[in-house]
Length: 100
Image 1 (cartoon, rainbow, N blue to C red):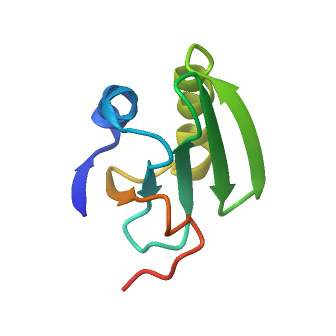
Image 2: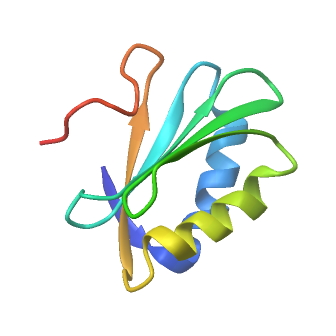
Image 3: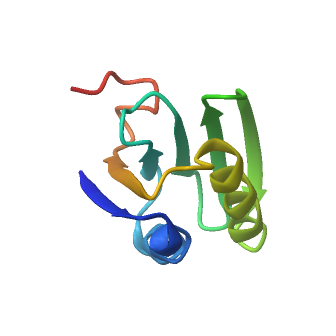
């Protein structure tokens, strides 16, 4: 789990998601771990994005729509955060797993 700047999160997540084999993903967490955005790669072109925090929602998007959706979700979920946590998810553990 790494702490990274919010400004570089979008580029880092989009580049990493292209390299991850399905069904794995990345979870973006706030510093306190009370809000999160989980991105799971379902197939080569389809992604599932789950938002937990101020709002709870689940989206199914293509690779082309992913950066635009993530940009808006990061702005909504982490408005004052400067540092965010990245956590890798495997197919077995979903975004509902407990964090230490």
